[in-house]
Amino acid sequence: MARSLLDIRIGTMVRGAIANPADYVRSILPHGFESIQPFFWQTLGNIDIKRLAAEIREAIGDSDVTVSSLAIFGNPLESGDLDRQTLAGWEVLIDNAHLFGANMVTGFTGRVRGKPIEDSLPRFREVWGPLAQRARDKGVKIAFENCAMNGNWQAGDWNIAHNPDAWELMFDALPADNLGLEWEPCHQLVYLIDPIPQIRKWASKIFHVHGKDATVRWDVVREHGVFGKFPFVQMRTPGFGDSDWTRIVSELRLAGFTGAIDIEGWHDPVYREELEMTGQVRALNYLKDCRGGARAIGNPV
Image (cartoon, helix red, strand yellow):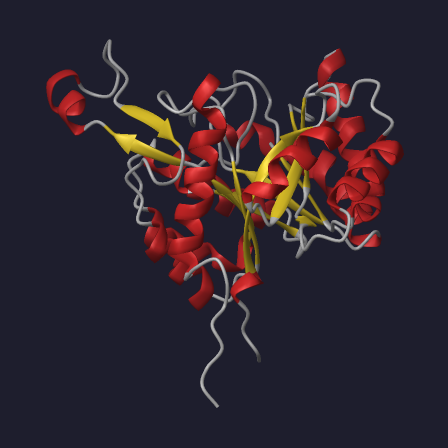
């Protein structure tokens, strides 16, 4: 099977609820992003999703850029107003992903608030069983972000898919081929988990990758512990954190992963605000280097 450098694209996330997402896309594509992931927080609001799809595809034009996936982050397992809007948003994005040229929707699983992860599994099956079937009928994959959102095994407000032991429970409870992970090393480093062996074990379930890293501040751990006054870990843009992305990309390739690594910005404590795009473009070029370069080099004949 022929291999291409662009089997793994390097892109970025784009807020879907800003005033004009298409203009934002036009402004950043000259930097060299190869994919984008439009995303929403909890609700689609008053967005006309069909119009948004048309505007983003027009902004991309004939450039070799893909919409890797769509995302909505909220808690579709609970029954509050915003939770119901999140669930409705999932349905809309699944039904309309094809208009963006995408075949994947990502986000949090949700969880029963304030309860251990096991207590969320019946509701997980109840909600995600029909959503997985809806997505399968549309040719769409679903990928769960692996962020704890400050939750843990015993309690939390947003997401159960943040720990490999939880992944075992989730995929045993609902063994659907089109359910997988939106994985990134950052959230595993927050747990002091080594991301490399995790890739090997879970590669078949890694559908999408977020380009986000972390720095573990071992001096803080040694002096103050992980539950003290000072944060023991910082979320970082790739190129500024602890992860060996050359090895990560290599392990993904060896496992047969194809898709996108979309940079998740707006978290780095240094490269933010006025330096946000500086950090993202540095991450873009760094990840391309880790991939093997910005363009493929043909072999001599």
